[in-house]
Length: 403
Image (cartoon, rainbow, N blue to C red; front, top):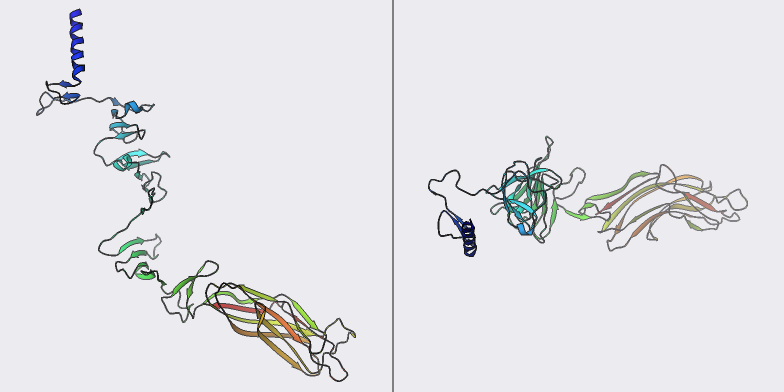
């Protein structure tokens, strides 16, 4: 018995010293070199049985088990049935084989299939069971979700080496137009957007930006294509000499406040506070068109003695002053001449154009009422004149900015 044990010990020491083991032949070419009995006609038992598992270990292997090889005999978990090795650097089991896609789940538990090779490099390429495709993410939030982590590299490239590069957008409603984004092959044409087969917008090479007809019925006299510009409120507008834009007030009613002024001396002039103010800071030169109609009550001043007013005799004036940044721009006046007295309710109206230069200035256009008293006639003095302007619900104003 001692001789048998000694023989085994000598054999083990011999194999350990050789550090190579062969099975089936005498000349090992590696640490373990196994030959089939008959390579040309092998039997069903020729081969090596790797440990077979029905589930992965509940405790992950460690660094010492880097490269551990198992066969998973289960079609459900992870990537399904097949060979796996442990990648400790990534702390995950990696499937072996020539399958390009395999089954799996993301961190939310959603079933998906994923491309094996990119996943080995830490870049998920997946298709979820509801049809969403994720490139760079295993939780796509849309039909196609591209998530990039590289700097200065496009997330999506659409390239056609011979013709225009196009992306077609087709909405689902019946009869809705389709839209095509086109990078034109001609270098001067730049980028275009088509509605069905009609080009609607062009960004030409060099930065020129044009747009097709917006609505010819509402923009008479506009020559297309026209340039776009951004107005002060951030909206887009059309830059043309004939396009009336920013229709601020169209036949607005009851726009004015009630303001009063009076004079008690001959030839005295009085001006009310502004009964309407419009403020604008143009981002391009503007021709401001303004029309108004405002009511005014003219009578005698009521804080003089005697209280029986004498507003007769000679010429008296009443009207509206338009001021731009406090400077008189247009004065509209009506006059009264006669001995019957100036009393009653009157309407004043005018139409004008005010050019405004886009140099950063904020313009305040204000409407004021004004009156002018007459002179003394012989021994009868003019007892004073009062004007009250605005506040009528039927007052009207219209302002249009031409750009």
